[in-house]
Image 1 (tube, rainbow, N blue to C red):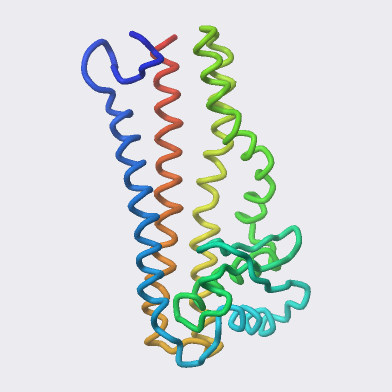
Image 2 (tube, rainbow, N blue to C red):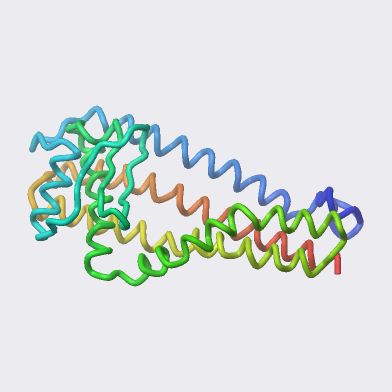
Length: 236
């Protein structure tokens, strides 16, 4: 069997893991397209409170007594994120100045990460701790595996798989972090009166669509890791 092609398994037929990997790649693209579509849909609905994304973020931080985190604008489309190192909630073009329920939901979600950081939420601490090695795994794992294949050196392939698994671990631990941030966001938006009960429903749809992109990415990464392990075992 020619390992480099990795399309043929056990002599004949198509490798089912290869097909599954392709399917997951398509699912990831669909999930990404859906979050953009859902956000665009609910970004047209203005909140009754009139809060912009930035104002909602500031209000949530104020309500929780957090005074050392800044809220600032960052360029890009849906590039919103919380930077725990610099303690900054970065809100994108579509979120910062928009008074829509979608923008407020995304801003609140990022504040959910702030609350996680403030309260020492364990999954977030783990994710933050493995960021450096996860970055190495995502950049170096596959090249190491390819090098091992070129030189037909199995130990190098095994090292590459272990390195790549660090990136996969990051994807997996991201799931509880993101789901928890969304739960916190929805609870705070309702409790603080930033969104009405009727507005919470579309906001939940936006955050759920965003969460599915993380689920798809994590599943795709796990499948790719399993496939690499199986191919290496067959090679041995």
